[in-house]
Amino acid sequence: MKKNILFVGDLRAANNYGAIATTETLINMLTDEYQEATFKFIDYRSLYGPTPINGFPKSTKSIVASTKEKIISLLPKPLIKTYIKLFKKAKPSVDFVPYKLSQFESYYQNMKNGTCLQYEKRLLEWADIVYINGEGNIVNGTDKYGKYRIGARYILFMAWLGRVKFNLPTLIVNHTVDPNNYNAFEIIEAVYPKLDKVFVRETLSIPLLEKHNVKNAEFVADALFSFKSDENWEPSNTLRNQIDFSKPFICLGDSSGIKNAYSQVKWDVCAVYSDIIAGLRTIVDQIVFIDGYNGCNENINRVIKQNKIGHIYLNNCSYKELYQVLKRAKLFVSGRWHASILSILANTPILCWGADSHKTRSLYTLLDYKYRFFEVASLPANIPELIDEAKRITNDAQQIKEIMTVKVNEYSTLTRKNITVLKDF
Image 1 (tube, rainbow, N blue to C red):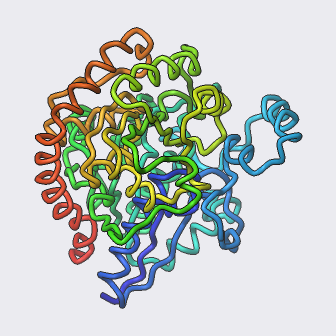
Image 2 (cartoon, rainbow, N blue to C red):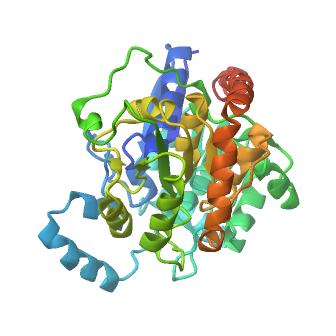
């Protein structure tokens, strides 16, 4: 297929296991399938700030400083407190994409007049197809100014531009829809029915979209279900310093529902996690923390230090290595969508709590999982029940693994539709 394909939402440079893993898997599948096509990519940075007219310089790192937490991860420790103070005083930046549907036309006129989104304009003029990786952008998140999360607004506006103003086949794939925001739903109601394809990665988004008069959404499994591992693996010395692989262990993770750019839980993170760790140690003594905040969350850092547990994050473990770690664990307890999928692929049982959307709850639906799902806000009141459920799951591990094997085979086949759909255009 000799087409120019504009891929919006290249998250390989994001500071997040799931974003890197699923985007790399999706892009590898696309470029393998369509070797005669020409691809251009709009990456993570464009979703959070205006893109220079000639684009951003290529990123050679998997960490891009686009939010407070990501900037902090790159700072020397003496500067962190100073930066946090400046961040709190900072005024909101000028919006480079609209936050209401009523603004779409005026922003398009600004694009035509050369005052915004000139990089995007040039790529849309070049493209034959607009292919948007929605991923985890269209989820809960309203800032203190009442505006919906900017990364989601960017891809929704790009979808509208591609289909309505540039008259291009436009698809949004591989994503969850759960914005919990009036302005976002108003945009979705206007944009989604016009799109050529809308693929959501879990089934709970479909009835929500139907409630908002979107009838063209289909469930197509997350691209990560197509991930293939290297079975000839030995842990590095760095990982051996964090995990004793000769002894059983449980992996414990965090959640975007605990803290994100828009909200955080009310409970004491260190105290609650310490109680959870004490409970899990009644199952096996060794607990390993899978840190989705990559060392940037001070409370999580304190949990790890005070409880003297292994610490796994992007700086010492790639997502491919994380798969291998999870494969050797007895259980993975967290509120992370993609890390839980890696655990399912590794045939290790999961126990989930909430995230910044319904995505982790939907994993239970996808697996027909009969175990209890926990709300993140009420976690402190339900720690005994969480530990009881962890024990029940570990006791049922063999039965669960058999079910997961069947589901992985089903979804790894289904996820190919994210790729083959382009043959329709």
